[in-house]
Length: 120
Image 1 (spheres, rainbow, N blue to C red):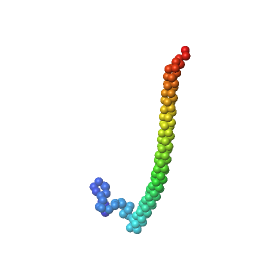
Image 2: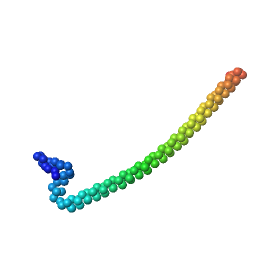
Image 3: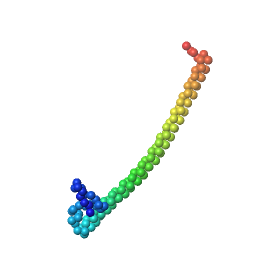
Image 4: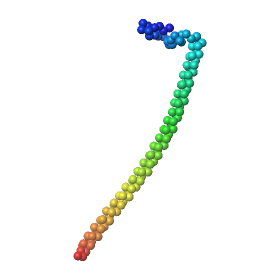
């Protein structure tokens, strides 16, 4: 049984020191109290486990949503990349055609100049 030391503090002798109120209870009352305590702790643990299960389920749902969003984003990036590549190819083709036309105009200007096309 716990015993007070000189400063009034209870010193444990290896078991839980519940105090004078506990010691004044009958063994049946102590058992009833401990059973109620165990039941309330089990109820609390059960609630905590249910909450944990709900959180785990919600986490799984969010992971699925995130994976789907990542897949959609990958598809969207692919589409955008294809569009950019196609646009770049179109721009390159237009640029090449402009250079061809400029070269053609220079050739024609040269032909006109060679034929004495300076009509002034």
